[in-house]
Image (cartoon, rainbow, N blue to C red):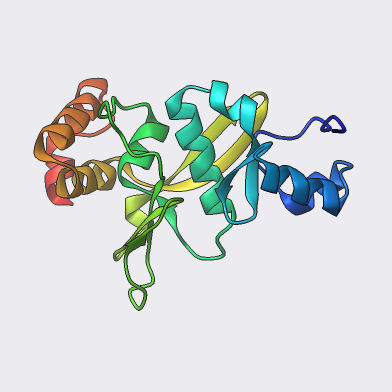
Length: 181
């Protein structure tokens, strides 16, 4: 098999062809397992992805999912906590969590993403930088207080409390801010 050009840690099929692969080569790599599918139409090179720590894999999955969406979705819950560097549950989910503000849609989850639907005012959102191997992405997230409150609402009690305790200890959020959400 032809050696891949130097691809970013997360890329689409169209980007792979811009880097020099033919559409046929890209399709073959996606089908053969040479690439791992992060979400529909977005990939990572499988062996490089497998060598990454779980938190970095999670961040790259979030970049892929949010990059593939045309709506106002933001990384949320455990994903936003991970992007902030908070201590996570030992068995944190592989799929990124996102929240979208379109209340006409329904919450769902599949093997690539957990989608929550809720009102998400601009005051409860923020931005996070994801940096991997010299590549940088900026993604929308829920703000620290909203992230903490969402984790308390949706995670098992012990995991939610431990995660929020981490955020309180590093000073990202106060207990009053969490209560206000």
